[in-house]
Image (cartoon, rainbow, N blue to C red; front, side, top):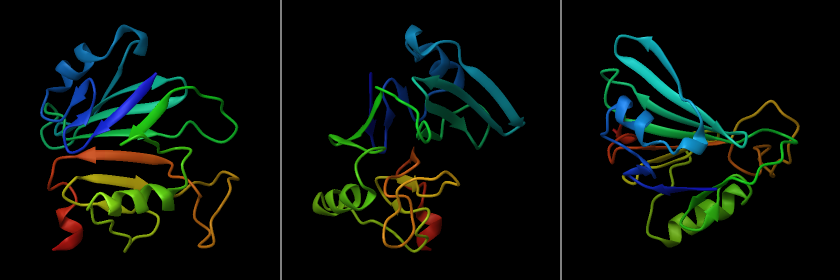
Length: 162
């Protein structure tokens, strides 16, 4: 199965702006039953695990409308066939520096002021390069590949550049 990022719109079939209930209904049957967690009155999330890849649709502002979708790397030693794609790059197996270099070649700006949490503002993608697991590391001691990717609305990461 392929999960394809379409920033800043979502990860098909999940779209930013749909309700959490619509996101649960839009998920294909093979994704299985969603776990819906209400963390507060204004913050809720639906989540699935696909072939060890975590998928979260988050309603962070009112507990109803999806504002972000995040996908999580399965973890060290886990075999998975689900691909998480960004313009053809499999983000959990392609070295992060290659993913970011390709983003720059597309005309996107990559913000690395927080090296463990780089972002591509405007598009709006946020990456995690942090794990306690024993994984291959680059020269900066960061995991060679990203461990999660979040897509939000176009202005989702604007607060990092105010």
